Length: 283
Image (cartoon, rainbow, N blue to C red; front, side, top):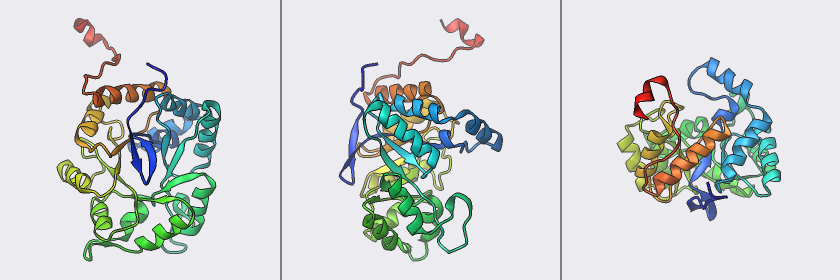
């Protein structure tokens, strides 16, 4: 691997971002598989291990991370920045209370409090999480209620607003009401995992979006092989769209980067494959 190869980039809200973003579910314990798998991730991932994964991505010029505001994650990002001597763009997806006293756990706190926390953690982008965005969608009226209120609060704090959603309508409605958003976050994968409509319909929505789309779950939470999931994403998205991939180890990060570069170059992905006894006859 060449040192810091030029991974393709795209402007989002006048900020240059790599088209591959660092995901965080495999840092924080959101496996989308089972509680046992969540516990395994949480047991495995130390601050030092997270730093190593971020460093692996930085080696490919991938310097943007997407996830919830989280203290352990923030400290790991700072460590990686210090060691690498380069900044990491934070794209945070906070949850917050839409009705005071109605949320608990990671989504507790008012919008003001949560947005202030994102600022304290150095967020450049703020995309209210799906649990907020999708609760505001009014399908009957075809609007996202209170969108302008929240995007204004984000702008006032010096961050760039976007929307994190699992409902493709969010993209369409935000565009129709000319919402002040620079990007959207949407699940998109060949398995249809966590997608509320068929992949071809979501693809059409993405292709008609006014702004770049940050796609997530390209490997369907580990249900798709990296080369399969990434091939689908890179071959069907626009040049302005982005893919977010989370990995548990630095080796996995490097593998996803190498596969992505090969696919974007329209070449067959030449990475070393895992071997089992049944593959002995293949040489």
